[in-house]
Length: 149
Image (cartoon, rainbow, N blue to C red; front, side, top):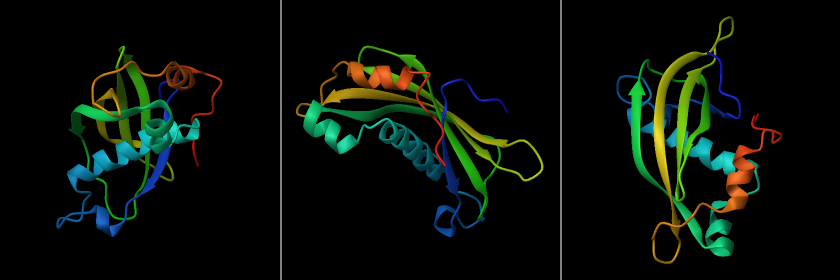
């Protein structure tokens, strides 16, 4: 599967704690994997979420999520979680995200895909505010390294 330009990639290993009684990754854990990829993308660009609240007075909150589960991940699978910005609003971002299983002799296998709408909020009153320009610029800069290992 080819990735969109500007995608951030975050590696994940499936642990026993991630699985359900059937031995596959519990459905809600895919959302945790996606959250970590978005958070680590910001962190890789120099934006720590706690500092964003303290220094710029903003925070990000999930507004809505739509997920398609295609195939199960299992214990010890090596996964890659991608995040790409698919839409920008004044006070929101929409992330297109995927979870893929890495395979030794073949292309990665798509397991899950989703769309996550994020609202930018004032940290004090939880009202929508514009996404800070420095964050928008960093997320859209093609010169910025977007792969983590």
